Length: 126
Image (cartoon, rainbow, N blue to C red; front, top):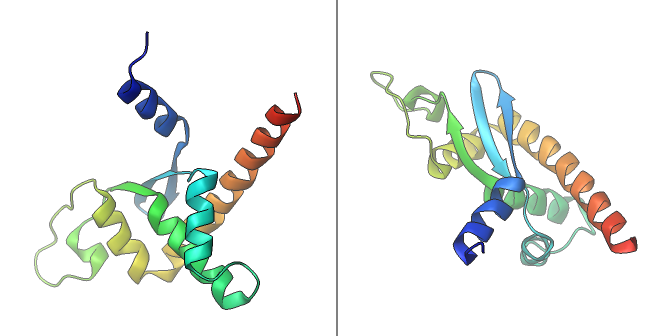
């Protein structure tokens, strides 16, 4: 029998994907529908451009699991370039300060969310 923690790990891993942006490889996890709803409500919905952008950016930041290949230069720190840990904090620091990275991650995440929603709706019909 599978344990609860094993189940949780497998469910999370099934929603994860890698996205390469420049020299960096980001790992993201597609949020659950409940997580998405909470983020959208917290950011004012999807009815106007400002709220939609805020919701999608918040969803992208929440989806970040890690980044590979990042250095202190990628987050704008002066001095000798040093590797950053493969962490959500490093990924968020880069995405929050680089709108090109944010937009690339947001666009891919949106596509993955749409694919997942379509698959879930198909499953519910069957």
